[in-house]
Image (cartoon, rainbow, N blue to C red):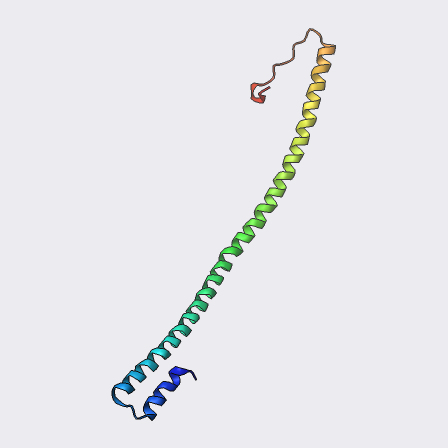
Length: 120
């Protein structure tokens, strides 16, 4: 027991009814009310934490799945880009060799102009 629990017993044992008894009872009620309020606040905070945790899990789970899907797509697209880049390099080498061959074997021939889209 703490001071709030002993106060009413002391007041009533000393025969202090009346105003002193009322004051003692009010102080006791106020103290126990504060303790109850603190307990209620702690309980509400625990419930709020539980609700927030459940909401966060519910929101994060679909995002986690979407991230996994997008990561797989990015990996696939990166592999495609590497494949296409290597094919383009081979194609450019072939075109250069072909133009060189044409200029050596067909001296009067004029190769086609480089497309303006290439920016060369």
